[in-house]
Length: 346
Image 1 (tube, rainbow, N blue to C red):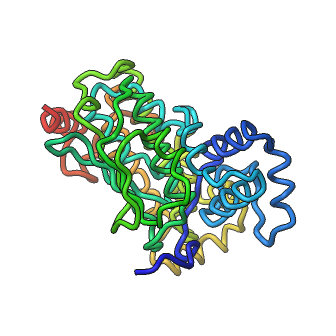
Image 2 (cartoon, helix red, strand yellow):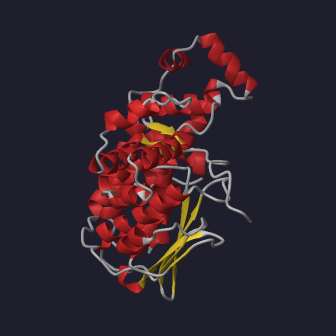
Protein backbone atom coordinates (compact mmCIF):
# COMPACT_ATOMS: atom_id res chain seq x y z
CA UNK A 1 0.00 0.00 0.00
CA UNK A 2 1.36 3.42 -0.93
CA UNK A 3 1.61 6.16 1.65
CA UNK A 4 -0.68 9.05 0.66
CA UNK A 5 -3.68 11.19 1.60
CA UNK A 6 -2.19 11.36 5.06
CA UNK A 7 -4.99 13.32 6.69
CA UNK A 8 -7.82 11.07 5.56
CA UNK A 9 -9.64 9.37 8.41
CA UNK A 10 -8.26 11.54 11.24
CA UNK A 11 -11.21 12.02 13.57
CA UNK A 12 -11.84 12.44 17.29
CA UNK A 13 -10.67 15.06 19.75
CA UNK A 14 -7.51 16.10 21.63
CA UNK A 15 -7.63 17.76 25.05
CA UNK A 16 -6.29 21.30 25.19
CA UNK A 17 -4.28 20.25 28.26
CA UNK A 18 -2.34 17.86 26.02
CA UNK A 19 -2.07 20.59 23.37
CA UNK A 20 0.26 22.49 25.73
CA UNK A 21 3.07 20.06 24.85
CA UNK A 22 2.83 21.21 21.23
CA UNK A 23 2.96 24.88 22.22
CA UNK A 24 5.94 24.29 24.53
CA UNK A 25 7.85 22.45 21.81
CA UNK A 26 7.05 25.24 19.36
CA UNK A 27 8.22 27.86 21.86
CA UNK A 28 11.46 25.96 22.39
CA UNK A 29 12.08 26.17 18.65
CA UNK A 30 11.42 29.92 18.49
CA UNK A 31 7.68 30.29 17.83
CA UNK A 32 5.45 30.97 20.82
CA UNK A 33 1.80 29.96 21.19
CA UNK A 34 0.40 33.30 20.03
CA UNK A 35 2.54 33.31 16.90
CA UNK A 36 1.51 29.79 15.96
CA UNK A 37 -2.18 30.49 16.51
CA UNK A 38 -1.86 33.68 14.50
CA UNK A 39 -0.40 31.67 11.63
CA UNK A 40 -3.34 29.26 11.94
CA UNK A 41 -5.92 32.06 11.98
CA UNK A 42 -5.73 32.47 8.19
CA UNK A 43 -6.56 28.80 7.59
CA UNK A 44 -10.04 27.47 6.80
CA UNK A 45 -9.79 25.41 9.98
CA UNK A 46 -10.86 27.21 13.15
CA UNK A 47 -10.63 26.18 16.78
CA UNK A 48 -10.89 27.70 20.23
CA UNK A 49 -8.09 26.80 22.65
CA UNK A 50 -10.27 28.09 25.49
CA UNK A 51 -12.41 24.97 25.09
CA UNK A 52 -11.62 21.62 26.73
CA UNK A 53 -10.59 20.01 23.44
CA UNK A 54 -9.98 20.55 19.74
CA UNK A 55 -10.75 18.23 16.83
CA UNK A 56 -8.24 15.64 15.69
CA UNK A 57 -8.03 17.22 12.24
CA UNK A 58 -7.23 20.62 13.82
CA UNK A 59 -4.49 19.04 15.93
CA UNK A 60 -2.91 17.41 12.89
CA UNK A 61 -3.13 20.73 11.06
CA UNK A 62 -1.26 22.48 13.89
CA UNK A 63 1.46 19.82 13.80
CA UNK A 64 1.82 20.28 10.06
CA UNK A 65 1.77 24.08 10.28
CA UNK A 66 4.44 24.24 12.99
CA UNK A 67 6.58 21.74 11.07
CA UNK A 68 6.51 24.00 8.01
CA UNK A 69 6.75 27.41 9.69
CA UNK A 70 9.56 26.74 12.17
CA UNK A 71 10.78 24.91 9.96
CA UNK A 72 11.43 21.63 11.77
CA UNK A 73 10.98 18.38 9.82
CA UNK A 74 11.17 16.45 13.11
CA UNK A 75 8.66 18.58 15.01
CA UNK A 76 6.45 15.59 15.91
CA UNK A 77 9.41 13.96 17.66
CA UNK A 78 10.11 17.16 19.56
CA UNK A 79 6.49 17.49 20.70
CA UNK A 80 6.65 13.93 22.06
CA UNK A 81 9.96 14.70 23.73
CA UNK A 82 8.36 17.72 25.46
CA UNK A 83 5.65 15.57 27.09
CA UNK A 84 5.24 15.85 30.88
CA UNK A 85 2.77 13.93 33.08
CA UNK A 86 0.75 17.13 33.59
CA UNK A 87 -0.01 17.21 29.85
CA UNK A 88 -1.96 13.98 30.31
CA UNK A 89 -4.10 15.54 33.04
CA UNK A 90 -5.85 13.07 35.35
CA UNK A 91 -4.50 10.14 33.28
CA UNK A 92 -0.93 11.27 33.92
CA UNK A 93 -1.38 11.65 37.67
CA UNK A 94 -3.28 8.36 37.96
CA UNK A 95 -0.51 6.55 36.06
CA UNK A 96 2.26 8.18 38.09
CA UNK A 97 0.69 6.99 41.34
CA UNK A 98 -0.06 3.44 40.10
CA UNK A 99 1.43 0.65 42.17
CA UNK A 100 2.89 -1.31 39.28
CA UNK A 101 2.80 -1.89 35.54
CA UNK A 102 -0.42 -3.94 35.61
CA UNK A 103 -2.16 -1.05 37.36
CA UNK A 104 -0.70 1.43 34.89
CA UNK A 105 -1.78 -0.56 31.82
CA UNK A 106 -5.32 -0.81 33.16
CA UNK A 107 -5.48 2.94 33.67
CA UNK A 108 -4.06 3.75 30.24
CA UNK A 109 -6.62 1.46 28.60
CA UNK A 110 -9.47 2.97 30.58
CA UNK A 111 -8.58 6.67 30.69
CA UNK A 112 -6.65 7.44 27.47
CA UNK A 113 -9.88 8.82 25.97
CA UNK A 114 -9.60 11.75 28.42
CA UNK A 115 -6.41 12.86 26.65
CA UNK A 116 -7.20 12.00 23.04
CA UNK A 117 -9.34 9.62 21.07
CA UNK A 118 -7.73 10.21 17.69
CA UNK A 119 -5.29 7.45 18.61
CA UNK A 120 -5.95 4.35 20.70
CA UNK A 121 -3.09 2.50 22.37
CA UNK A 122 -3.13 -1.24 22.98
CA UNK A 123 -0.62 -2.15 25.70
CA UNK A 124 0.37 -5.78 26.36
CA UNK A 125 3.20 -7.67 28.02
CA UNK A 126 5.24 -10.37 26.29
CA UNK A 127 8.40 -12.34 27.06
CA UNK A 128 10.60 -9.40 26.04
CA UNK A 129 8.79 -6.61 27.89
CA UNK A 130 5.93 -4.29 26.94
CA UNK A 131 4.46 -3.72 23.47
CA UNK A 132 2.36 -0.68 22.64
CA UNK A 133 0.47 -0.64 19.33
CA UNK A 134 -0.99 2.68 18.11
CA UNK A 135 -4.16 2.77 16.00
CA UNK A 136 -5.44 5.98 14.41
CA UNK A 137 -9.16 5.39 13.96
CA UNK A 138 -10.17 5.00 10.35
CA UNK A 139 -6.84 6.39 9.13
CA UNK A 140 -4.84 3.33 7.96
CA UNK A 141 -1.65 5.33 7.37
CA UNK A 142 -1.21 8.10 9.98
CA UNK A 143 0.65 11.33 9.13
CA UNK A 144 4.34 11.15 9.93
CA UNK A 145 4.32 13.95 12.51
CA UNK A 146 1.35 12.45 14.37
CA UNK A 147 2.83 8.96 14.48
CA UNK A 148 6.25 10.18 15.58
CA UNK A 149 4.73 12.46 18.24
CA UNK A 150 2.80 9.53 19.71
CA UNK A 151 5.77 7.15 19.82
CA UNK A 152 8.17 9.76 21.21
CA UNK A 153 5.56 10.80 23.77
CA UNK A 154 4.97 7.21 24.85
CA UNK A 155 8.69 6.65 25.44
CA UNK A 156 9.14 9.97 27.25
CA UNK A 157 6.16 9.23 29.49
CA UNK A 158 7.35 5.67 30.19
CA UNK A 159 10.71 7.04 31.32
CA UNK A 160 9.00 9.57 33.58
CA UNK A 161 6.80 6.93 35.19
CA UNK A 162 9.37 4.15 35.62
CA UNK A 163 12.57 6.11 36.12
CA UNK A 164 14.09 3.77 33.53
CA UNK A 165 16.26 5.10 30.68
CA UNK A 166 16.87 1.83 28.83
CA UNK A 167 16.26 2.26 25.06
CA UNK A 168 13.37 0.44 23.35
CA UNK A 169 14.09 -2.89 21.66
CA UNK A 170 12.63 -1.60 18.40
CA UNK A 171 10.17 0.87 16.88
CA UNK A 172 7.92 0.44 13.84
CA UNK A 173 6.53 3.31 11.76
CA UNK A 174 4.15 3.00 8.83
CA UNK A 175 5.44 6.02 6.89
CA UNK A 176 8.52 6.01 4.63
CA UNK A 177 11.95 6.62 6.09
CA UNK A 178 12.83 10.35 6.20
CA UNK A 179 16.00 11.53 4.49
CA UNK A 180 17.59 12.31 7.84
CA UNK A 181 16.95 10.08 10.87
CA UNK A 182 19.52 11.65 13.18
CA UNK A 183 16.88 12.92 15.61
CA UNK A 184 15.14 9.54 15.60
CA UNK A 185 18.36 7.85 16.65
CA UNK A 186 19.12 10.50 19.27
CA UNK A 187 15.72 10.18 20.91
CA UNK A 188 15.10 6.44 20.54
CA UNK A 189 18.63 4.95 20.34
CA UNK A 190 17.27 1.66 18.99
CA UNK A 191 16.53 -0.14 15.70
CA UNK A 192 13.81 1.79 13.80
CA UNK A 193 11.88 0.26 10.91
CA UNK A 194 9.77 2.24 8.42
CA UNK A 195 7.07 1.21 5.92
CA UNK A 196 5.76 -1.30 8.44
CA UNK A 197 2.22 -2.67 8.77
CA UNK A 198 1.57 -0.90 12.07
CA UNK A 199 2.92 1.75 14.43
CA UNK A 200 4.38 0.21 17.59
CA UNK A 201 7.10 0.33 20.22
CA UNK A 202 8.63 -2.52 22.20
CA UNK A 203 9.95 -1.58 25.64
CA UNK A 204 12.35 -4.00 27.37
CA UNK A 205 11.77 -5.92 30.62
CA UNK A 206 13.41 -3.16 32.66
CA UNK A 207 10.15 -1.20 32.40
CA UNK A 208 8.16 -3.97 34.09
CA UNK A 209 8.45 -2.93 37.74
CA UNK A 210 6.40 -4.44 40.56
CA UNK A 211 6.48 -1.12 42.38
CA UNK A 212 6.70 2.14 40.48
CA UNK A 213 8.89 4.88 42.04
CA UNK A 214 5.99 7.27 42.74
CA UNK A 215 3.37 4.68 43.69
CA UNK A 216 0.61 6.13 45.88
CA UNK A 217 -2.44 3.80 45.94
CA UNK A 218 -4.55 6.23 47.96
CA UNK A 219 -3.95 9.10 45.54
CA UNK A 220 -4.43 6.78 42.56
CA UNK A 221 -7.90 5.85 43.81
CA UNK A 222 -8.83 9.50 44.11
CA UNK A 223 -7.67 10.03 40.53
CA UNK A 224 -9.70 7.00 39.44
CA UNK A 225 -12.82 8.51 40.91
CA UNK A 226 -12.22 11.83 39.19
CA UNK A 227 -11.36 10.15 35.88
CA UNK A 228 -14.52 8.05 35.93
CA UNK A 229 -16.59 11.16 36.52
CA UNK A 230 -14.85 12.88 33.61
CA UNK A 231 -15.49 9.91 31.32
CA UNK A 232 -19.17 10.07 32.13
CA UNK A 233 -19.15 13.74 31.10
CA UNK A 234 -17.47 13.16 27.77
CA UNK A 235 -19.72 14.12 24.85
CA UNK A 236 -20.37 10.67 23.38
CA UNK A 237 -22.81 11.99 20.80
CA UNK A 238 -25.38 14.66 20.11
CA UNK A 239 -28.06 12.46 21.67
CA UNK A 240 -30.37 14.28 24.07
CA UNK A 241 -30.00 11.31 26.43
CA UNK A 242 -26.20 11.72 26.60
CA UNK A 243 -26.51 15.46 27.19
CA UNK A 244 -29.17 15.03 29.87
CA UNK A 245 -27.19 12.29 31.66
CA UNK A 246 -24.16 14.56 31.92
CA UNK A 247 -26.22 17.33 33.51
CA UNK A 248 -27.96 14.90 35.86
CA UNK A 249 -24.61 13.66 37.18
CA UNK A 250 -23.93 17.19 38.46
CA UNK A 251 -27.45 17.99 39.66
CA UNK A 252 -27.86 14.79 41.68
CA UNK A 253 -25.30 15.94 44.24
CA UNK A 254 -27.87 18.49 45.40
CA UNK A 255 -30.73 16.00 45.58
CA UNK A 256 -33.08 14.59 42.97
CA UNK A 257 -33.68 17.32 40.38
CA UNK A 258 -37.05 17.95 38.81
CA UNK A 259 -37.39 17.82 35.05
CA UNK A 260 -37.84 21.59 35.19
CA UNK A 261 -34.45 21.97 36.87
CA UNK A 262 -32.84 19.65 34.32
CA UNK A 263 -34.31 21.59 31.40
CA UNK A 264 -33.05 24.82 32.94
CA UNK A 265 -29.55 23.36 33.38
CA UNK A 266 -29.59 22.27 29.74
CA UNK A 267 -30.85 25.69 28.72
CA UNK A 268 -33.82 24.33 26.80
CA UNK A 269 -37.60 24.54 27.15
CA UNK A 270 -39.14 21.80 29.33
CA UNK A 271 -41.59 20.81 26.58
CA UNK A 272 -38.70 20.53 24.13
CA UNK A 273 -36.88 18.25 26.56
CA UNK A 274 -39.95 16.08 27.08
CA UNK A 275 -40.57 15.85 23.33
CA UNK A 276 -36.95 14.91 22.57
CA UNK A 277 -36.83 12.30 25.32
CA UNK A 278 -40.06 10.82 24.04
CA UNK A 279 -38.58 10.63 20.55
CA UNK A 280 -35.77 8.54 22.07
CA UNK A 281 -38.35 6.28 23.72
CA UNK A 282 -37.42 7.35 27.23
CA UNK A 283 -39.30 9.32 29.85
CA UNK A 284 -37.69 11.51 32.51
CA UNK A 285 -38.14 8.97 35.33
CA UNK A 286 -36.52 6.23 33.26
CA UNK A 287 -33.63 8.55 32.34
CA UNK A 288 -33.11 9.42 36.00
CA UNK A 289 -33.17 5.76 36.99
CA UNK A 290 -30.69 4.72 34.29
CA UNK A 291 -28.27 7.55 35.06
CA UNK A 292 -28.27 6.86 38.79
CA UNK A 293 -27.65 3.18 38.13
CA UNK A 294 -24.67 3.95 35.89
CA UNK A 295 -23.22 6.37 38.42
CA UNK A 296 -23.71 3.87 41.22
CA UNK A 297 -21.59 1.27 39.40
CA UNK A 298 -18.81 3.83 38.90
CA UNK A 299 -18.85 5.09 42.48
CA UNK A 300 -18.90 1.59 44.00
CA UNK A 301 -15.53 0.87 42.41
CA UNK A 302 -13.95 3.78 44.27
CA UNK A 303 -12.91 2.37 47.64
CA UNK A 304 -12.32 5.85 49.04
CA UNK A 305 -16.08 6.50 48.85
CA UNK A 306 -18.19 5.17 51.70
CA UNK A 307 -21.71 3.90 51.04
CA UNK A 308 -22.98 7.07 52.71
CA UNK A 309 -20.91 9.17 50.30
CA UNK A 310 -22.32 7.27 47.33
CA UNK A 311 -25.89 7.67 48.52
CA UNK A 312 -25.32 11.42 48.80
CA UNK A 313 -23.75 11.68 45.34
CA UNK A 314 -26.76 9.88 43.88
CA UNK A 315 -29.22 12.25 45.49
CA UNK A 316 -30.53 9.97 48.25
CA UNK A 317 -31.35 11.56 51.59
CA UNK A 318 -31.75 8.19 53.34
CA UNK A 319 -29.59 5.06 53.29
CA UNK A 320 -32.64 2.82 53.21
CA UNK A 321 -33.82 4.37 49.94
CA UNK A 322 -30.36 3.93 48.45
CA UNK A 323 -30.26 0.28 49.58
CA UNK A 324 -33.60 -0.49 47.90
CA UNK A 325 -32.69 1.31 44.68
CA UNK A 326 -29.29 -0.37 44.46
CA UNK A 327 -30.82 -3.81 44.86
CA UNK A 328 -33.28 -2.92 42.12
CA UNK A 329 -30.39 -1.97 39.81
CA UNK A 330 -28.05 -4.87 40.52
CA UNK A 331 -29.95 -7.54 42.44
CA UNK A 332 -27.50 -7.15 45.36
CA UNK A 333 -27.26 -4.91 48.38
CA UNK A 334 -24.49 -2.27 48.19
CA UNK A 335 -22.47 -4.13 50.85
CA UNK A 336 -22.57 -7.47 49.02
CA UNK A 337 -21.83 -5.79 45.70
CA UNK A 338 -18.75 -4.01 47.06
CA UNK A 339 -17.55 -7.22 48.73
CA UNK A 340 -17.79 -9.05 45.41
CA UNK A 341 -15.70 -6.31 43.78
CA UNK A 342 -13.01 -6.75 46.42
CA UNK A 343 -13.00 -10.52 45.90
CA UNK A 344 -12.61 -10.07 42.15
CA UNK A 345 -9.40 -8.06 42.65
CA UNK A 346 -7.75 -10.52 45.04
